Image 1 (cartoon, rainbow, N blue to C red):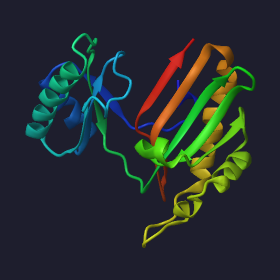
Image 2 (image 1 turned 90 degrees about the vertical axis):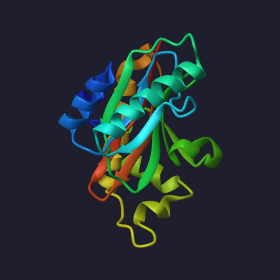
Image 3 (image 1 turned 135 degrees about the horizontal axis):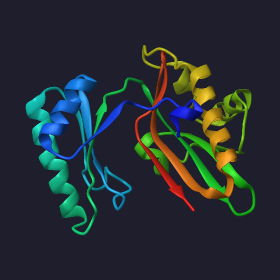
Image 4 (image 1 turned 180 degrees about the vertical axis):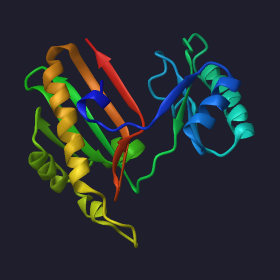
Length: 206
């Protein structure tokens, strides 16, 4: 759904065994990430269900065993559908793009800095969906840490145009979904000089 709406996402494959995970990693190209796939575990990092930067088959096999064991220890009754194998994505800045179906305003789009630290930094901007790319740019300008997008400590500036297009595309999707959508969380979105890509996403339907 996201890709069809113009939202770039990291390439993934679902694996239900360690050997399937290795085959998927070889097809995607190393390095890869492994993430537990369960409808009962919404926040994978809290369950220690994520392993990053895996560079070979041995690392993938070990990571598969680790995330499966961690998930079962975190929530013994959780339904485990396997492990998502994902190509590692580049990008210097972590952001969050989300949708929330508000009882008063309807579907609202949000963008913020921080990735997993979003709840601590609380550096976010909101608009009623949908928004244009121009309006998305104004949302980015409202962020307290917006200077990070321009490049710091020798890092290149992020491709703001690509990021603005992504925010707009997410907002259009939310407006079209309307009351069928409760929330959508793209976290993190990695932004860099060559574009922006979502590397994890959670959608909750009514």
